[in-house]
Length: 68
Image (cartoon, rainbow, N blue to C red; front, side, top):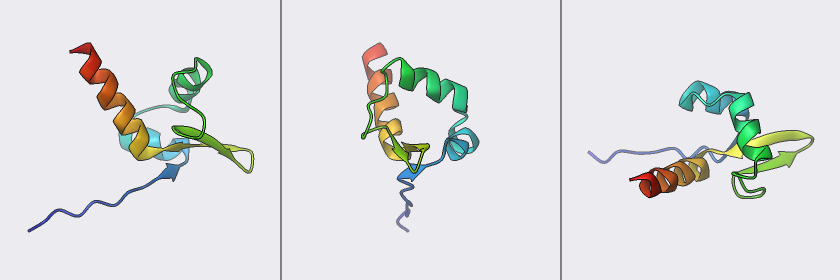
């Protein structure tokens, strides 16, 4: 049986907190420090900051690979 994955794409910070444990404050610090790129990892939609679920996964995997 093949596993099926649902891509979430752009999500509210609350979703990331519930599924990944990343708090709004943590995401905001990384965004303001320039560690997250606008339009790739985050974007502003109707005045609300949203984050790309899968692209954050890719970023963290890349950073984890550099540390090894």
